[in-house]
Length: 400
Image 1 (cartoon, rainbow, N blue to C red):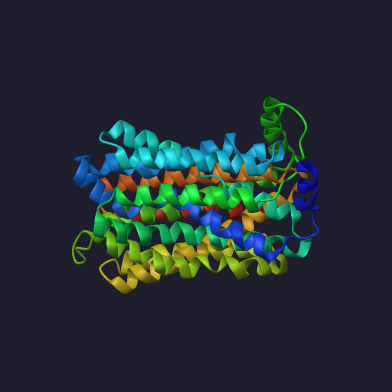
Image 2 (cartoon, rainbow, N blue to C red):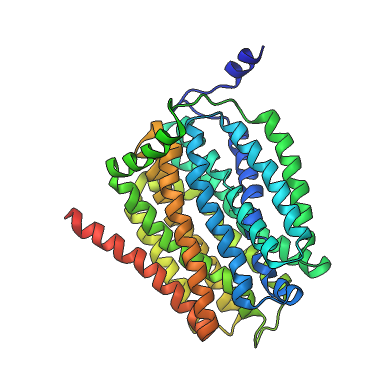
């Protein structure tokens, strides 16, 4: 009976996926990844409640990003080796525990440790994307990966809105117990609807991990796409790591609720991933990546020149989100398409670099904020995206 059920739920690579399943995975991707970003509008409140400095509190998003990168390295490759549904369900169960640990934390060690575990176990969206890429039709791969990416990005941005609002009304801890309940319910849904996926890799875990290095050497473009995206993501996260501190200063004097509401503006950018996939297939990864880099640079310039204006901040948030989606979707889908039979491992190469860059960008922005305030944050963002630009220009010149 179990074998019949598995056969009924199995799919054939490159033959297409039903839209309802892709949409469901997009929702679950957003719910899962949101756990990493609930803290960002609440950093000021956490600092006041715990007595930690701004630098110490900034370690919370840094450690969640580091945990996420570790999860990508150690968990995501298992998607080629084991049933992906089991991997996701274990992660969801661990998230319930880590989120409750944050809720009950009464010291910095427990708070930071639970944040690390939360990041480590929030990698399920990166299980979904290789699955969608592998089983979607060739002409639909980027588009359907874009649907899941949109769900992920809406989750990132909506999480800030929700946590900022909930934190303003009920305190910063409340969102974490709510999130734990949501993850438990999500696990029940996935248990029923996520299909069985036959492994594509036969071997040991050690050989699986070694094969990642082999793939990176065999497909050097994967490193190019990954590293330049990581710098761009560091630029992007640097904004959100310090925006709560900026909004508490003159002339705004606003709390977590307003910082969270700025995430609504970013959702406009996130939804561009729904259509960006079509343009990648039509214009190619380099053109779409170049457009994203130009938009991110423009966003930082806007927020540097009009940093005392709500309009300037809102415009910058929208533009930087659109630019980030162009960079991520073009490079990530192209990385997975380099070796379709190893989509999870190719995605590991991409996402580990991506979130290492995000962690470094978050740390750099927080450090420069402590030294020079908003000017330091802008400098950090421009420095990170400039590295993406330099790598892209070098690649372009090398091809000639």
